[in-house]
Length: 392
Image 1 (tube, helix red, strand yellow):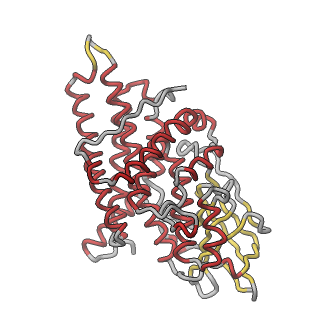
Image 2: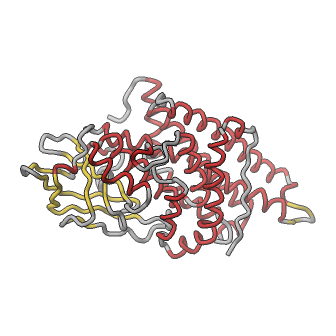
Image 3: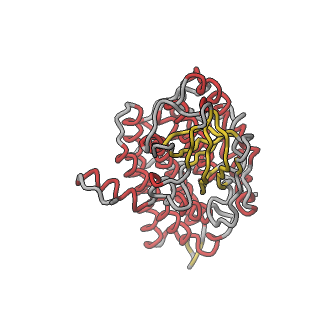
């Protein structure tokens, strides 16, 4: 079992922009990852198993809905606090951060923002303490980047709806207690529903054979004439803008998380380069290795400031969808490039489970695709700056 020797890197003293509370929250998450995630994550990845025993710990460090008001069981923290927790979790593993992101941004967020008071009181406290785990059903087999084309539908049957359809690539689905599901009603309007595990006709087949996010549970959501009570409809927002609002929150968390993966790869590569001796001296003394490391810390530093500024804007409710999109795309791209460069510094050792780099690299191949593909995010920025829609 490899010891977690990680040290954070703050080349431009960004910590001076954080409050003492921010640093306490981040450090608590960092120590929890070192203690509870790092010792078991490689084995979980090799076995392609999600370590469900960590769920109570995630709740204890406030990873489930940290920005949810205290009256509903959350910690009432700001958006930078949420981001810092996601950064530390993804430093451990993207799949662990995905579990927390889904619970926070794709399950708790829509209930908090789009639900009624009864729904908030019924579900949010249990989601915050981890006694309920949720998932989010938007993507379908034929509709990924074009979610508005979804086929999953509901039909009004008086005091309930009948739900039919399917969703895929759903994190947490194999063990989730509830699912936030998006479906079209008979007027073709997209509605959000809270679907509970025990409802007849609702199944969650697990997805196997993944080379990425192996320590994350992924599956489908299948609805075969599922009877959903009308009180389980999210009443305060519908249309495509409702699930896209959830994705804004999730993409924001990913932007922070990707920095964590990049920092872990950089830290590993830097330490290895100082210790690995070739031609009678550490490989850190060679120009080409210094070039790799210097570019890594430069891109990490730029991403840290971009994301911190986004966090300020988000806490002030001024961050735009396009700004969030740019930050997610940039940070995942630099993280993936850093993982690849770090792997080269480690040579053959970089492909083994003794180091985290190859695992991060494989995970980031998913992160660069989910919550909006790399190309889609470029088009979001393009539309924002030109006013022209390239999607149609």
